[in-house]
Image (cartoon, rainbow, N blue to C red):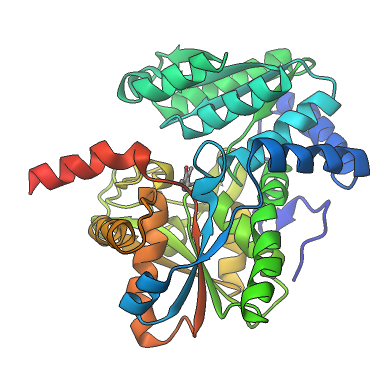
Length: 398
Ligand SMILES: *Cc1c(COP(=O)(O)O)cnc(C)c1O
């Protein structure tokens, strides 16, 4: 079941569907990552930063009141307590350190809502590496505070005014930059997506989550959980907590996607972002994976109340694991996520990200049917302070 470390494909998914000019850059990155990933000095330094800068290990918390309300024993993996308020720093610290070991002087990235850009800016500042973040001009207006955060930490935010002026245009610009400056520059991708080696590398950097859970749950329960539940946009927090458990067939793994307003689509738009549940095989951002597309193969506009889940693709390894039945794809609607958001706030004093609330909402629905078993771990991928205006907006609409 485990993938060979050097394998470019997860079954029929993954690979490197990129313009020829990018191939040398990907080959170099693959080589360098293979060289350092098991290197003792590299890992010692990475662990130092994860611990003393990032605040790891994050706690595994027995949520007693939520457990009582939902009718199953629930542990929360507290990635919301990691520096920056989400799991994203695990990956950016790893890639920033790799940038340093590769002898490169500059990091570029693209960001939609600004969460990944902010995590890049943090890691760039920590290592003193110049960081430039491409962002759709529309997104820079919508996410003013994240632009300011990045700038405070010394990153340069470059507004992209081409096309729809959103994430996909920012991705194009970042790619163009990388091709032109590959000798000096590392391109930091924020989830388990894109061409090989990114899905594998980002998964490995995020696997610190699942490795910690293995030790922590043994200490508390003396056994592994019956199930692990994680929200899935690109899929990095999900792969991070799932990966160390892939070989443990008794542990059921639930990938909860954003069901938005329901799993309906028009020719141009999906009312959701449930790619594993409702997508079809295609190529997006350099990898073969499942994609939300119409019958002509055009990418649909995705939708979710949670900006971090609002993506028309999904990591290729998740598509593979879904096909072979090792993970169970499922979804929560916007309305269900909001309800779960309020449950966790009220019952536990924890304000979760709207992304993470999708995972909580699925547990609420599924606990009653018994499909989750007796001990459940939910990955709380981030904190919800960034989402308060969204939640407030929904309240006022009603
Ligand atoms: C970005 C983000 C996500 C979605 O990204 P994945 O790669 O699917 O993990 C989920 N939760 C939070 C808090 C995020 O910031």
